[in-house]
Image (tube, rainbow over all chains, first blue to last red; front, side):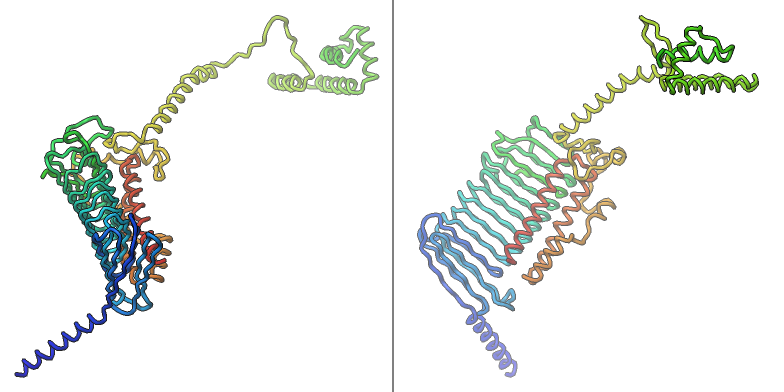
Length: 282
Length: 259
């Protein structure tokens, strides 16, 4: 009997705490009317930002504030919208957290910045710039727009990205690219691992570089690309029988390989200072 | 009689005086005396020379100076223009070159040609070193504008590149002692100022920025150490530039956050 009472008291206390927390949260919604190719930027030090496509002429921003110690500054200048979290003094990562959910026109140009993250965007066609210190970044199903991602240690995952410039830079975060193709694809990580899975498209310029992180690329047998792989201090491995051709560099056994597959439609450069490079056949 | 005439017959005057004092003809002597009476320079010169000649007569044969003494005197007098060797018309004065000098001159041409060839070769290597095949990691003696170029003596003593070694590639975890010494904190002055600004404006972010900054600095040092060992490796230089770009990105991210 006493244990039942004790359990009931604990449950009531927990429920009341959750309710208090929920009540402390503040949800705010902002709506803007924009024209084609709207320019939208969201900046929060702590909190998640997610973006999905909405209607063609309207931007909807839903901000969830964890405490009353933060404010949301929002400005609209014509076709340009700025959203930023304004933290008061003494705010920590928990009390200063503001999560944003956006519905934007598919052709909008987006700039999203969050130190803690996560940052996510999907099914869009405009240019996308993502910046986070340790934020987890996830972008998928983008076409025609340029994608720029920068993190310090946050992992980056891009999937189903087509027909745009892709530039990724991370000091120590891992980079995962799945079915990422385009005229220009650049991924650089210092100590993080870079993983690429795809066929390197047709006619693109791909460059994956690390300092100490490993680079692993998995491509199908019908890939059409010219490969240049070199690890200054690490090892390189290759599953393909590349066609050698005249090249200004002489391959070093175990440290580099050069050659082409198919019609060499794309150019693929895999470079690392001390990481291991592996080109595998799917 | 003029001063030049006196200079011309001066030896005869002295010789004549040393013997009987009448070496010159009577007419010549009259003209000489007339000139000496009107020319104090020539008079003093003749007087001094006659005095020297007279004193010389007092010397015994054992006191005769060595022939080289007279040669030196004659050389000095010629240098002052007081006496001149007679020039025979139609003949050039040929300076006989000692055999050793001829030997040196003969060798100068091929040495000059070799020097020019070596300089051309060096210049050619300097202009073509950026496209040197990557396999040739032996440090080149000449490197264009390398900030970490080593003196030739050190370059010549460097070990062969890793590609020429029979052992397995160097594992990432193992590093040479000098490179290990390179890869260590602390950060530079700019980095310290950067971290101070982050601490004052965004203290909760300092730890994250400091960790990443250390990682980037370690990568820079590691790459620089490698380039010092293999200054001809262009891939490594390109990589160093990329690492610096990462550091710039880190600074930019912090500035965007703390402004």
